Length: 508
Image (cartoon, rainbow, N blue to C red; front, side, top):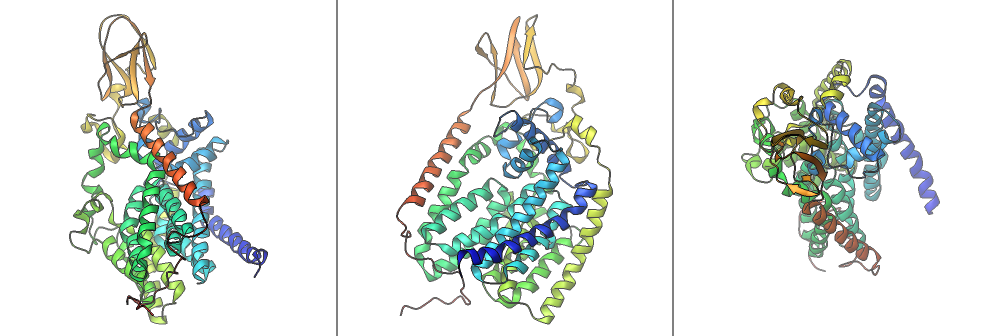
């Protein structure tokens, strides 16, 4: 079939995927995103990043309005991709809520497109599989209950990562794996970490069982991916001591603390069991990923979530995104029997009922956006190191009443000598100067010993930003060199990832 013939078949599929995405998102456009778990973060991050983009700041790491004007280094630590999207939509003139809705619509559609590409490559019912991927419970729960835009965006990258592994050791596979995993790293770090163990490692293991030549190209792609994401990773990994990072690991944010009995009234376990029955007839590596991932998501593998770095995943059920991807891949390759399919549908009934009830409740619950815009309650882990965590109350909202009388300006005239504390969170990017000379300061709010005179708070570039950007540039140059080199693969032609058993192939 000619290229034009292929396109004429694919574009109608993409149009249908767009219609599915619009139908799913229509209630949010009509009634608002709703009072989801992350509604405040979506609102304050989208609005501030949009404002920064309008001013020409293409990577706004510091959010000046957060914490009632104390400021927050949120995007020194949080992956930026999803909020770059919603912020860019807001920056062109749409409201914050419109930007969130349109961003979520585009992310849902994009996940269907990448799944369609993956299943087209495999030749296994791409349109049906892409729609199923978009509609499965955890995919929908991420937006309607949790409001987790970054994790919602992570669904885009899983099919591309699998496609890249299928193309190893060819040069195109290395390039695609580096780009797709880098994309996941700057989208959602927990999913990127879990994917390394529960998706990438099993798939490369199966490929290496048949052809060990895939190992070096896979490692090369991983190294380039980490380098491409270096502009984000280097600051995020080296500045943890500058914030209240201990708040990330309170009991409710430790995966080992969750049990099968506390996972949202059975929503997560029923989803995992339904996916297992869908994938079981495949009897492939995809079945293994679904079963092992499902057990881990329900915290039924002893001590697993006590092992670093898995202990940093926060919630074991984050794995369900990977499990859903593997289950769709499996079921499109081999449809379940009437019995296993019926059991899967029965298990999915509870999550969907729960999802509809929760979505209706969140959209029906009023959200005080005016109060939110005034308080700007950012994630408490981004409060400066040394902050009195006793001021963090219900809903992880910091009580900042005691700081409202402090001076907030970036410049201040001091009339008499003595200590000065500003209404500005301390972070290594800020320097106090007097007559162009640095003045020593401490935190958690910027505090310094002053003499009479004019003082300024200046933004400086720290070594982590320089090193991270240099690493990303070096990785991008390496990838470009790899892409434009000879058309020969690194180690031969790609071997399709369609291995029905786990038996080693014998030489001819």
